[in-house]
Image 1 (cartoon, one colour):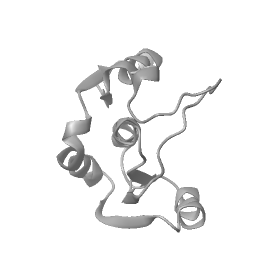
Image 2: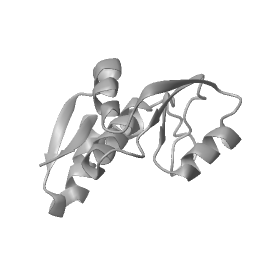
Image 3: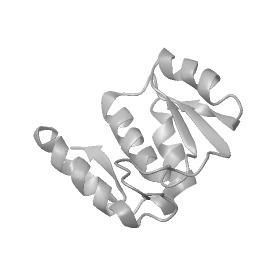
Length: 126
């Protein structure tokens, strides 16, 4: 999608686009999830949050801290789902944002990530 992503501001000489302001954040705690689930959820949320942030992930205590410090003025809904259960919840809630699934070889994760950017997909381990 790159520069054509609807709602992203690439004006001037921006290296990173400006996103629309968040209006409501769905908060998901994936601290207890397996590494593979965390990777899949994180890549999926990257697509979901384009062009407006809608999902915030808590992967560590630092993320919980920054949620309270940087996003306290944004409306928030904390999901009762956590850990590995978050993936199913996100797929149900945001399936329209995802256009495909990229199954990757752990030795080639950089290639999978590049394809993900182009295809609005999410990464899943083998």
